[in-house]
Amino acid sequence: MKRIRKLISMLLALALAAGLALPAAAEETPDPSIPVITVQPQDVYAVPGEQFTISVEAYIPNGDTVGYWWMDARTNSNLGKLGPALTRTAGDPVRGEYYCVVYNASVDFIPQAARSVESEHAVVSHTPLTAEETPVITLQPQSETVPCGMQFTLAVAAQCPNGDPVGYQWRGPGIGGSSYTVYSTMTDPVFSWKANKNPDHTERIYCVVYNAAKGLAAGGVDSAQAVVTTRLPTAREIIGDTKDIINSLPSIREGLKQDPLHLINGAFAYVSMVAQIIAYWVLDLFKVAPERLDAASSWFFFPAMAVLVPVMLIYVLVFALPVSLVMLPFSMS
Image (tube, rainbow, N blue to C red):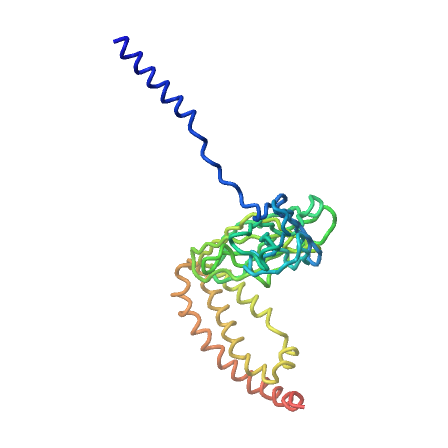
């Protein structure tokens, strides 16, 4: 048994010695004509209209000349042979991404895949705001339950510590797969909008406040999301909304300037709104529940119209028509 063990040990020793005696596998030697990048392009910050520079450093081991071919990564377009430094002017908004294809210019007129090396990408972005330039929100918009189809308002307040003006961009639910939709006409701290016409509808609305002197591209601060939920309106709320519509209409003088037949054209609209107010006033008097208003309103609306239409005809014939005929020649001149 000892002899067998001794034999195995000798065989292992011989195998190990043979392994050590084998020549080491030859390592692959790098091609001395391929460039080596020593300094990669770095990300930069800029403001609109400001020049920025991105650079790269490289050499070729065999001493050949290094060529630099810059690329715009966002558009996948080449910017040409511009040397080791790329200088551009920041747009508005500030954004960009560039890289350089380093190649052997002694051998190739343009980069060839076999003898070129791509650098890392450098991203250009807006210079970040300082703490003094960043708006601070002092009043957050509050969640509300509002009557469907009626006007509602949200409010936000903010200020920049350094006194710069504050800009406001209100945003709502996304459409078509987007993460949000911008209410482009809402650029004030008070947001006024008509609620969805369907009851039990929910939307989340928030405001991005930003330093107006630096622009929204410099970064903004999101307000809290206000959850706006719709419900059926009461009769009193419908009366108030109809009165608001009447009050928002132009005065008689302004209406006649815009349309000489304003008193005639607007007569039916005014009468129908007055009839609606009368109808819902009765429904409010009887404390009709919101879910029953639509069905009950016609019982009072049409009788009110039956009384008001004759009054409207007298108004048109006695007042509106004579005034319109007098104003018509002035509007045509």
